[in-house]
Image (cartoon, rainbow, N blue to C red; front, top):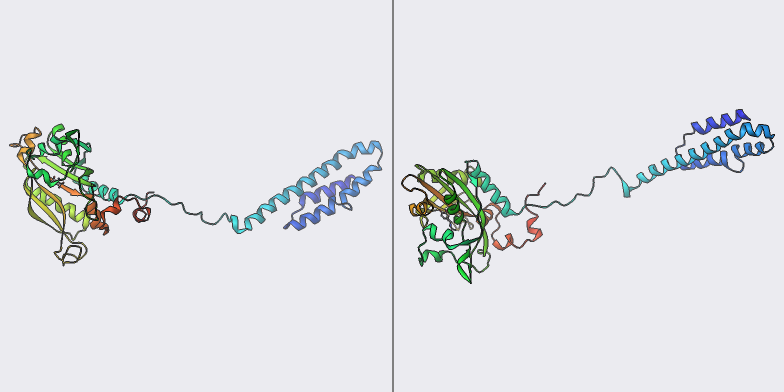
Length: 340
Ligand code: DAH
């Protein structure tokens, strides 16, 4: 009997089924009513007490081993069967998670700042709620001067000295007050004007201001800096032209046009047939501004420029309705560069 138990033990140990049906057959053959192990237990009953003592332990071991083996095999085959099923195909690519996208205004602002930082410009920031001095007076807007009407301003009713900045030029005043030349900064920020909202005007928009102050800075430096910017932003073929203009804080002042990147300067409906698109205002910092900010205008000169981020974004992406930049419509925003 010991030998038969040993043989059965080996049979159980070496059993390698391929299907659940084979396991079931095996279970019936060993543990079923007419199974081999069941027969052994029948025989066991008729043994003497002495023999029972000797064999009892091994026959019980055999039973446990057979049961464990069958359960184990069933479990492992179960998972193989389950993984065959399409619903949990572990090898399939996971469902892609939607990632966010950067706002087109952030993308363009970052690109503008990047371009100027390659020329050694650093970034300066300033408050959106300003006082009259930083937005107007220090920038050579005399009190009651009509130039103040160029920008429709939101004032605080109880104290008209406090207002929402209408341009980021106010930051250049703070930079000049707080640092000594050479100064090379760009100042990105949000600005506010009392305008009716339409496809081409908004009461909130974004500007990047630039300022360069040192000894012997000339208009040629300004021109070269803006040309570099235009080529980096709109492509190597871009060219610029400057038209005389007026700003209280610069003298001389100019408006800058870039060659239309859609028609290559031939004239199309975006550039209204002219071949040129206006991108910014600029000029040589007026000596009055330098003096108001505590910089010696006999020793130092400089240039400044200011551009609208929405305007550049419009030219880059062909999105002409300004309101789209502020409505946070996910269908619009999703079309821009994803954040990874
Ligand atoms: N501050 C002007 C505006 O908001 C833009 C500007 C023009 C800025 C000429 C400048 C400049 O620094 O030199 O319309």
